[in-house]
Length: 119
Image (cartoon, rainbow, N blue to C red; front, side, top):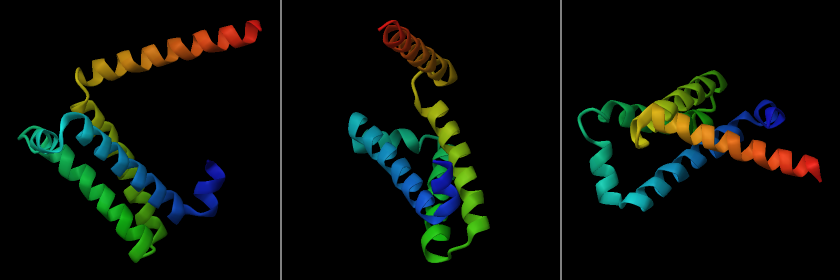
């Protein structure tokens, strides 16, 4: 992954942005597009939504149209931070819900690794 970022950073930024758009589309599909947009534009979430969408658009602009490596890298960092805040504000339970999901994931991976290593 690190080689991909260093060798072709513009492609990495585009793939990362498309992955983020896929995340948004899947969340909209799960809850319905209208209710998802309505939830994103609530008063307490509109800042996170606009920040995330702005980061997506600027990453796209600086990786395809303007080809500015420094601005693209800054927008990618902004996109990651906005995605984290967006996830915390969107996932039910917020940070506690994400901690629980991560804890469940770690326990599942530990169980799989222990099972595989016993074989």
